[in-house]
Length: 160
Figure 1 (cartoon, rainbow, N blue to C red):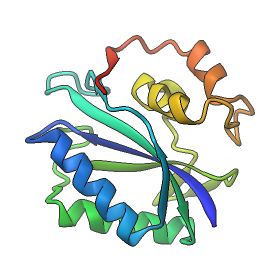
Figure 2: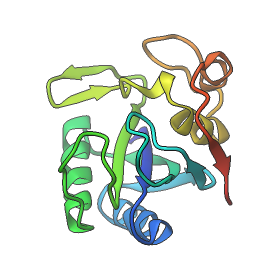
Figure 3: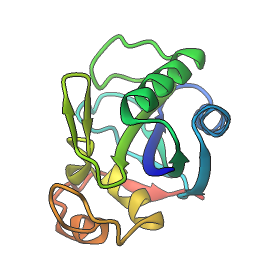
């Protein structure tokens, strides 16, 4: 089994419900959820004229390879009603693979570690809560160090 860190986000509708439904589907279809961060209220990143997000990171133990994991994640997003209309636009659910063990994947449809991980407070804060010593396989710094060095100052607040 491989350890993967997955970011969930929602900024439309009943955000808590969508994240809970996504986590439930992940636990059934993708593997065993070992840990989960608190929920974080976060400012929108990349496109600021939209509602705030709720974000959460989970640690997943999975037998799926990265491509199959992505395919299953996309199917869960579709199942929950996600429509891809606008890059960085509002969405009822967004599920991203942040890390997949120490693997590096650089393909047109999948990049692991997530290419923006080290630049986003809304990713690093919940990830730091559950995996502060995990070393980014490209940058060779742990999550706590990346958070300390981060210049992103967008609003991120723990809600639970």
